[in-house]
Length: 290
Length: 347
Image (cartoon, rainbow over the protein chains, first blue to last red):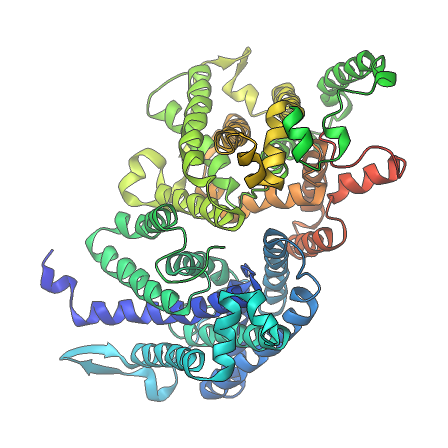
């Protein structure tokens, strides 16, 4: 295997496409964890729901409508999740809430199966993005470039919000010192409503974006959830920057590993997770320990 | 012992070496348990339909896995999300011993349990340091890793890849040949006795000083360390024990089905045991067993319509929100007087 072939532009772009999808999901997961201390095992199900909604909306109207409306619908789901689950259960242990989200994911998976069926659905990219373009002399699907742009663009927007706005500062404060932040007058409940809506909306966005890139079926959620959990843990629970960095790392390992050695590509993420958790339990970022 | 009693505000019955007035009832209880075990051996005589007997055997296999998860959850507060890695891993170990090493049933089974125990001791030494949430994710990652590993083409010669591993057993176990083991009627005593053995093991461990230390550590680890207790080693042992119990379940699956498929290592397979444990309640040894039987009945009733997951999900949410002690806790609360023993008393 030639090294040049390994690190071709196409491979790098493929790694980034996978990473951008994971980044969107993982940053939503990390946000919710940071604010509510909840590991949302239903995040994969939200993503799966988003993909199915995106499929129907694309069929009824267009991809662009789906790209806007599906995340908004998921925000509403997040609203219900916050009011019906997270607030009543806020005094229960982390594991209890995690198990409730696991149960809800099962329910949501079944509801989607009843409505859309179990068969894999495929969705085509919109006309303007369907063709290939030249990427440093190599043909590359336009849609993946779009995916990378939207994925990292939305994460950059999220990071900017966290860094430079007042509400973003409050989110960071609550993630790091919940008690102190509350004593200083930060309204945690209102903030968590915002963040859970945002996290769910991001899951929906990832779902719609994944539609033309991967196939849509009720099992897609649980598969990506595992990758997502690995990314969030490696990046440091509750840390957005860490999640983005580790998503990129994960994408590169997957794509380049699959060229170099498929066996290694399959096992590497888990081994990485093990080493990170044993060597640096707080993750690579500056997140908190669960 | 007295150290534990002073520091940990645990409900009294945990330490009770049976109050004096009830000491005489000990022998009755023992006789009752022995009678129940013997009576259980005659279930195949009562349940003639091989389908229902097979269903009950499935319930037993699930129950053993659920006891293992429940033991760790109740004694250490650590919930395994990836129990499939342990049960399925044991099935694969057994299969590999039979197909690769060419051993007969008994040495393969012994190898499977010993290797499982050793592997779990090594894994436990790493993972029990983690807090409950990272622990759940670590075990999940471990089982997913095994799931991916058996499907990798490089290991295909050993694990059979996607096709699974056909286990052609030679020799016999307690006079039962490989074909006998696949029949529900003949396999029942093996499964039943294993279930009883695992239940007694979990119960005895929970009652012992070892169990008290584990529960006290779960409640307040720092205090236990102050009081001079080692809090790490007991938890490694507990994980090893849970791994051994899950290994028994996986071994029985291998013996009964003579086949190891990657599906055994699936997230959902481990989820079944977890759900059974939650529905039954982890507070008692009987809880996971009750939960496993309820779950298997549900699987039979709703499995065909595909609504099983829907009811499972609703059940899990309902149990955690409304009945944290599970079905067994609910039953016990009905049976016992309000001031009587507590559900937490490890039975």
